[in-house]
Length: 80
Image 1 (spheres, rainbow, N blue to C red):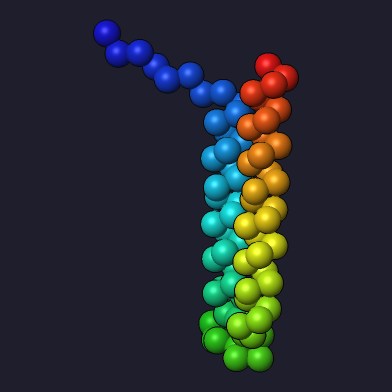
Image 2 (image 1 turned 120 degrees about the horizontal axis):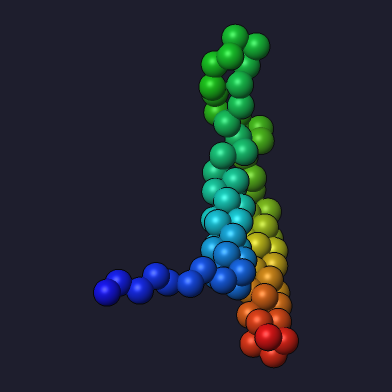
């Protein structure tokens, strides 16, 4: 007999967090991609982030992820 894995709100919030962090990291590389008036994609070098800004953004992303996952998991560990 195959048992179904129970999907809890904790798992859903953790999966959501992983996708949110990945989307933020991906946004570093996709921001310079724009569309012109003829609906053609082009790479705008003016919108590319400097190395220092990328580093600061990555610190923000990982710091936010640390706080998010800590709060979600601490809540379900101690409150449930």
